[in-house]
Image (tube, rainbow, N blue to C red; front, side, top):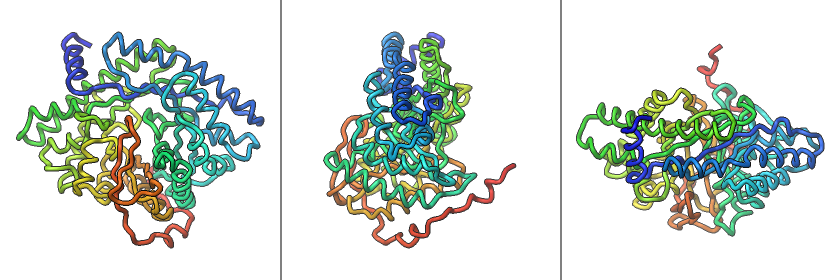
Length: 451
């Protein structure tokens, strides 16, 4: 980086909340597979604590030397359903506890990969893992779980969709003392990516190297400040401004990723340039959209504004780095974005509008609290809708819903930290039960056949 770029980056860090949201080490556990579950878990623990022994220390060194805040250091691992499936264990909670212990030993705040990929059907390991999710998330602190229920090539596994509605409800109940916090660590995907550095959906794909470093950057505040300087200008100027800003943010992410790779002695994977908000003032994607001229996010025009933002972020990032991956766009979680929270409270942002926005954004219905008595079939139908958007549009979509036990519309669920707080949002009261009970698979769309 040239001196001018360095100085500009320092200004963005000091004044505009620019940070590296996460350095995530992906670790393959395929060589830990063993028919003896106890031996497999020991191999898993040993490999994680060996590979990630210096992850936190290196992250802190880079942060201190370069003056770049690195908020989180995390680990993603091979989907545990693939690893544990060789054993004859009846459930996989013990594997989750092993991951939790390893995460604590190396000092990372989250470890992702208590996961299963069931878009086309279940293996025995998949069934055991999914059944274990509620207890696993209730009995661990740092473990994150994800299940992929659909892809554009395979269609949507509606049996898995139905089951995940039930699993989310059970997870909420088992963590009801923390207002269903376990559900904040559980994501249901369509078209999940193998190199996502962000939690709770990160896992280490089987196509990845044995060990790799991914970086997730952020910077909604930087984009908003840049747009403040072009108020009243045309959308051509807005798009170019976002693109140039994303370029600078991604360059910083690449710098950190390459440096971490060198110091840790593992390959550099990708930069995920997603604009990831936090509840802090000045770090909101919603406020970026409002800077484009919306009175409040959720009003008419919101989806178009998000489309421009997402596309311009991708264009700028791809120009800046040859290895952009993950989700790379704009996140719209409700509880983690101060502007989204305000929009829900004032009534401008509904679940229906959020669903429309998920056809554009990086992920989907994210960190949304709903009434605790919401039926599992309704939750499953919400998952199905999101999966359909992803499958039809060749994009990643996801659902992270919290049916907070004992709450109703108008209540507030408090999670703290980056997870923020969440007004409980109303859901459609008409039933989807008969729809969900059908099971089977929704076939892949015709445009999926490209060979």
